[in-house]
Length: 263
Image (cartoon, rainbow, N blue to C red; front, side, top):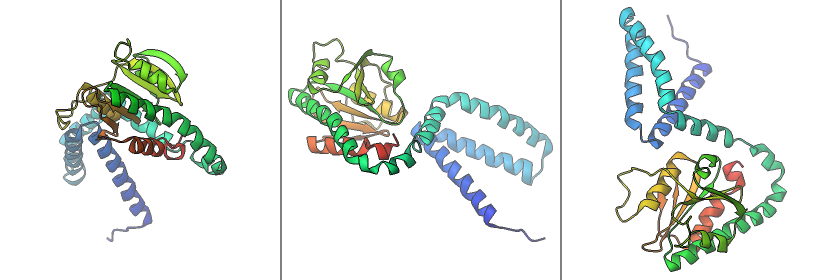
């Protein structure tokens, strides 16, 4: 008996490999790589017992464990799954329409510059005076939950306003500022703190909070250090430290490009 292997089988294998890769990325980003490895070992053992050895009793027990385990994993990783599914949909949103409106890209870039330049100037001003600041800029995933932990402002992005909010005697200077839809949405917000042990010891709580929110949401977190005045960015769970004004503007222009983010 010959085993037939066609194009459909190639597509099937490719899709399974793609699904496993995205599951791996999801678990890695949420610091649950060991859980992913454990799941894969259990699945392989389950297939070996039920399909190859055809052990009915043990196979049926493992079938039940798999059924219950899937529900348990959904509950355990509901935030990560929600973020993954949202990002999956957001990257395709308006992508085709943007191609038809490519003539408006110059106007769009000019608007983005009006948003980015005040942020860069405010960060440079606070850096010179060593005023600590933490600014979170929304990309594809909404930051409504984070904004709800602070005071809603809903104001135009303005250099002087940003600097006043983070002034040392301001009641909102200790929290994070959330920028959404090219407006200052809220200030004094509370962010999740990263427990990553690889963070350099010289980086303080603001940096840990910036890394924490970048691990959980698709956003850009800008930190101005109160101790050194250094400017850093946290994105996708990784830091870019000691940025100049030109480098900061370049990163924000690239990362907040509507065509890149699918907005």
